[in-house]
Image 1: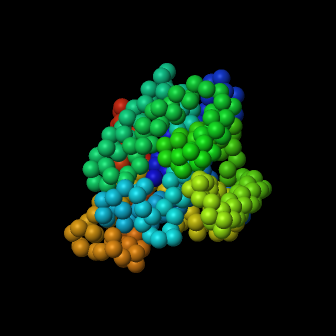
Image 2: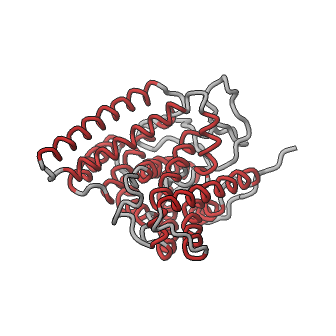
Image 3: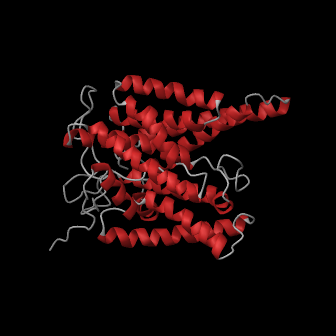
Length: 371
């Protein structure tokens, strides 16, 4: 789940300052248009530029693609059996929650970027956001007929109830709400919609404080933050072990959820650091195509899993080995499709329909050919 206003797509225009919130101007955008030029390997980060001359933040595509892979691996057995993702852990020790926080954070980031873009294009930008969330809700309700554990409906509802109204708040209030909701969700609910709301708000606050525009340029920030997350994770795991040793189980669930979230932070910071190394082209090659078409991939994965389980008769729900091999085959097929599709088209087919519903006019799909 997951570049525009939501985690599955990115805004076509550059982000602009949010009126009244002191956002920096000329913030890098995350466009759906295919890259036209790439910075040299020895030069600055290759946030590719587009025909419009606007840069693309490759790191967000990579993060989205990585999260998409984890979500499929975590949920594939639940998809095959038609159960909900909150009932059981599908693959033993594999943690199914690593992808959800990343997508939730990206959702908030994309939402703030789209609001900036819409504010520049139309007189009622929040109406654009409302249409976007309404279309996502409709997609999610249809998807729910195939798999009850899907997350799009939750994202749409939380977006309407929490994220959209928060756009009238100053950025410090948004950040404060995120700082209250995230630990509160872990302590009292173990996650759920409150955690999603907190991560949405955190992602939007990061945009409004100008953090996202530095994402491709900073090494020290992810390094220090990653070390902080790792230290917190160590403390959380030590506390869990100590509580189990004395038989105290009251806060074990909350500690487990906190450890999961800290682990997500370690993964995200680790990927951002790796993107500042010679491994950047490899990570981009592997994950960016999946990330650029994440909504299409998320939805088609359900169809492919159901087909493999019910038509081909693969025992995905009963065999972890079969589940892993099936997930690998699906991701490989999706990666090939995305790579070929994006050579000709600006964005995925579902992303294109979603944008059409957002702006109420048909956007271009094919890439413009240049001589």
